[in-house]
Structures are given as C-alpha cells and as structure tokens.
Length: 212
Image: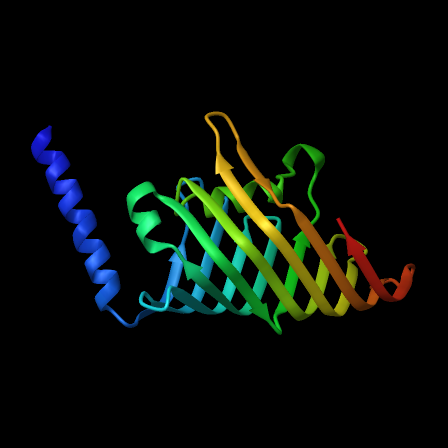
C-alpha cells in the first residue's frame, strides 16, 4: 500500500513537471462516446497550451442521440488550474469564450415516454472529465442560431447577435444525482423568427434581453 502511495505521488510530480515544460500540443479529430452512447462529442482540432493554462477547440459537433445536433465553430478555455486538477480531479477554470459561433440544432420530436432530458446529458458529459466542474465566467458573443424541430410541420427558429454571460457556473457530483447551477445568467439576442414549412406559423421579435 505504501509503495502505491509513493508511486501515485511521484506520478503527480511528473505530471506537474510535464505541464510546466510543455508549451503546446494538439491532436485532430477527437471523438468522445460514452458507454451509454447517449451522446457523441466530436471536434476537428484540440490545441492545449499547458504553460498558458489554455485550450482551444475548433469545429465542435455535439449530438444527443435521437434528439439534437449542435455545431460550434470555435471555443477557448482560459485559466485552467492544472495543479488542482491533478491532485483532486476537480476542474476549475477562469473563463470560457465562444466568439462568433454558428449554432445549428436539429431537434427530433419524440413520443413523451421516449423523451430524454438534454439538461442531464450536459453535466454527465462534463463530469466524464472530472469529479466537479467550475467556471468563473462563460461568455458566448455574437452568435447565430438556427433551430429546426423535425415533425410533420417542421417548426424553425432563427436568431442572431446572441450574447450569453454566465457567472460562477458549477457542476457537482452527488451520490445519486448531478447538480448544475450558476449565480447569474444574462441573455440578449436580435431578430428572432419562428416559422413553419407549412406557413401556418410566422412570428418575429426584433430584440430580447433577459437577466436570470
């Protein structure tokens, strides 16, 4: 048992030394699929900058099985506390930036008994990397969004100039469930449109601002 502890401590020291020495490494075509196969996360390129405590992702695709497809062009993660993550498996981040994203969602309308809760998939994905996940601030700026609800009538929603700020975002693991919460959430958007292929629905709003 004592030998295992020594080996574990030595491994942590080696990891910290590696992070302090490596300036950059990257890999392409990353794909994450959990055993449950509830979702799939793919990204064309991931660039990690250990010394600068940053990660950059390009061309992100997130699919929730039989329910939604999301695409984001780029994402930056800044101020990653690598030392704390190595020691505690708790991931603490200063800032996440999503600039000029193009978000496309295709939602598949299902029967009530088949419906999954997408909100449960997000913390499940985040906690696949760590025991807890905390971000001081998240900013999505100047986004374009297109959402299609696929059924017989095919309802569409479009908007632009989407800005979202989230302060103190946390996901924590519990024995029986997962918790996801934040202190402040601000959303603003412009040119919201809702319409259907059959032209039975046509609705628009010039701008929306919301503070939660």
